Length: 317
Image 1 (cartoon, one colour):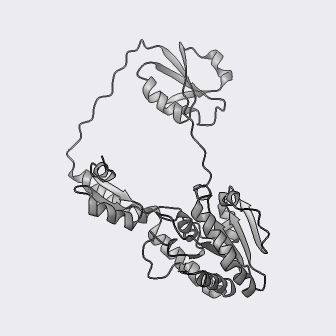
Image 2 (cartoon, rainbow, N blue to C red):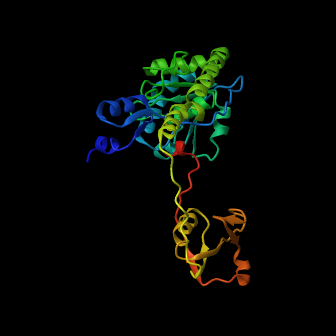
Image 3 (cartoon, rainbow, N blue to C red):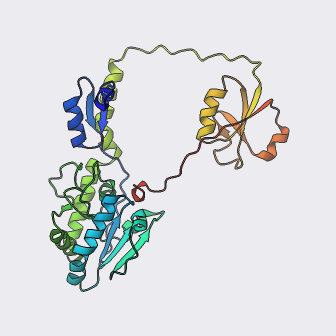
């Protein structure tokens, strides 16, 4: 079965950008299609005056590697010359692991950081010199939601809704990118005007309210048209079920509880840190190991589900 055939089994298909939405609209027979842009919290961090800090954020993917290398070779020397050596470039994210050690004037390979807000706070201009790759460039969305002056390429702008106010700059050549970055560094008023347009654009496009408005309206229409739902009675479980204590109060504990409550009478959860999930989890008390001596139970069941911690996806993709 093809991707389109699978998608056509849904009531609605959500695309992350207009181009993908057009693809589905042209190929689907019955399913409705909507664009659901990447929603993000707005954290405006206007640039500090009298700074010339350029920021690039990227993961280790090939488009990021090639894009920043081209920028370093073809754009950065001109920017350094025009700013009389005052410009500084910080390269942030796992892309640094794929680059050789750099000894270029004004360039710092930062690597992965836990707090990107701190990097955006110090940035005067954010660049996204991406020449190929599909989908929506989340790094551009992130920079706009931080209210930054952004310079990108036609590829970097793909998937972003049209912006008649020119909320970011698009450079089609290395010369144009060098000139755009330099102008923003040397002309604070020009940069501040672009920052304001970026904030307005992000507010209208990427907040949760803006992103989910159309989908929420459609869901409400479905709910109003749907017949009344007859609620099922809660299942009755026999009271002679064995009493069980569950270990693990994370995702595994939650999923395990939903299944195991049909087999056991759950008397509580055990966690090494009693306050990790509060004193009640899934309606049952949470116990520390030291408290178990006072608890009566017939079975011990371990519920475990590995969940990888992600600090900032921007630096890893």
